[in-house]
Image (cartoon, rainbow, N blue to C red; front, side):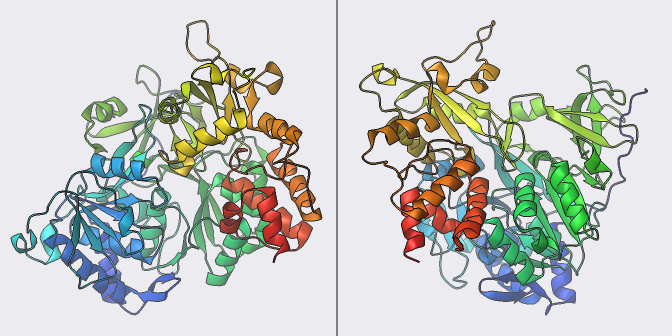
Length: 633
């Protein structure tokens, strides 16, 4: 069959306007309309606009101007939305900084983006790391206070600028935000995203309907680019944004939040979508449109959802951060769910997609090739890394002009012009919707004082049970599994704890496995397929084996002491597929992750008639602690 190039690509929508200008239109026309709903109540468009103007004025006085990177160190909240909007009004671009990240990660992000001003509140101000450079801290809640400085002494810049934020002069090519993604060299990549990309995403889109009737869920982390769709999809279109519960939430907690606030539009990662469909499908009944993606969508759960809620438009959303959240989308039908693979669809309006072979020639229909994407959604580049930017972008071949981003995704055209996603061409992995470069985690592991070598492998492929396993060779005799000095359980707990001080939670491996040597291929490279096939019977030690060893000691990890502990152990064994669980085993040390925890909470409610908030589950991660919490009410 003949090759396709840009067939099926959509004509561009207006993208020269900035997203904060789109918001301002609605604030002017309908100032009393509710813009935000959060724990502190409702906030109207007019009040949000006024507060953002005042904060923007302070930011301009602090030195913000066009393309200035301003850190926003806040969790998902009304404060984050206010601060991001104010940064844009001041002409700058916001850098989301998740307070749950370790200090070393935050310091790296501030340095990489050249941040000299951080907006936060009194709760998180102490988390601003000292980078050695001057960094001003602006309290987003105290509209009248002066800023303070950490690091080097700050010059008096207040008199150097006019206080009005309109001096910014931003336009479509101006930067809107900087989003960090995992980097293969051990350092995260800072993708610089333009206003044109955000406008293309949310201004009269063809993949969903965004207008004043939208009640949008805001449940993504501030450092996950799905938050771009959530925040500006609502506020740039006159809709209402409902801030999700703070911190981690179980499927049951999210379901209640959807129902309580009348949510009718949301983005759910594929894993979270599958979980909510399995655990509380009825709570999605108020949705009129739902986007899922970030990983392969399960036909089984998609079919259950469509059959239960046929009036809701279910969309498979695909796209890398560098293309501003979504590149291609597909309206999932019942017919799609009868097949093994659900397509990622066609390019959204204003987006160009090419599937090219290794010689950059258009691939024929049904022939795999690399997916390239361009148009207004393409990022400006990676900050301070012109070489990597050049490696990941090419001049658009036909017609000439513009750039295309090389996604490293393998894809192919179907006869109808829609696209199938076939996998990665590099070693990148997806975890809870986040892109994970194994090299970044391996570099952090090799920096550990007891680790000599490290390699990662994905040991399951489905969205729900995929396990990111790290295999480590320990440094010195203590690393030998038959050494009397070796305590694999303690070694793994120590390595995991030190990783948490360097990496955000989505980059922590689900499982740590000690091996005496990494298997190599015939060309001397680590054989990742052989790693995934390693088993305890080969003499390797994993978290599963360590649990059994500790149980045999019979002192700190004895048999269950109460009926509640016995019930919990049975639930852990079922959900985590680990046969030997002791009462003192730690959920995280056994490789547990949030989707598994949410499933456990549902099982606990069914078996014991109690509901444990996900945050409390995380605070009591052993069987004994959790049982004590439940028994004490």
